[in-house]
Image (cartoon, rainbow, N blue to C red):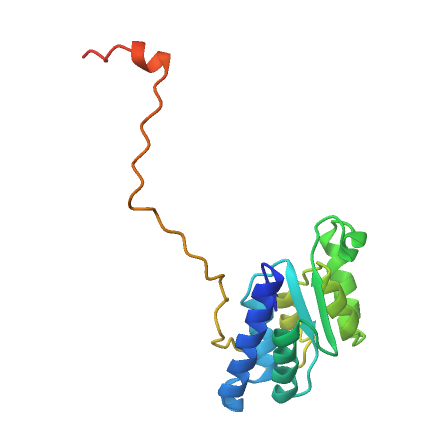
Amino acid sequence: LSARDGERLRDYAGKLAAHLRREPAERCDLRDLAYTLQIGRDPMNERLALMAASREELAQKLQAFADSGEAAGLRHGRVARGKDEAGLLGDDEDIRRSVIAQLVAAGKWERVLELWVKGLDPDWATLHAAGAFGAFAPRRLSLPTYPFARERYWIDPSAKPAKPASTPEAASAKPAQE
């Protein structure tokens, strides 16, 4: 999961945990869930990654994070451009893809999660197409929407419109003649 800030990330984790408890298993497979979150969402700076063997374990970890901002077995980080560990790999996308592909092939999932929360964005679509996650046909799921901040901005109805600023050039300008 990723979000704009920590508060939104906790809200999102809570919404996803509730969704997992509500949806029947056949409509929310863990592999399809991972695929949807990897492919169907743009990564933001505040990130959360975890591994879970079951829907129940996933829902439990997400709810624990939503409640306290912490949970055992979670990777949580904030991408600080230019200061992340992923920056050590440089700007060469081929090197980054190669490192991730090697980690995935070796089954070093914890390291992949660590790099992701620190700012490395794997080419998930290529990894899925190459069968890195097993031979299954992933499908996108309908998941809870992003939990935007509930801030309201209203125009004060009693405020008077500002008058246009007058400049010496505007005052001396002559109307255009046809």
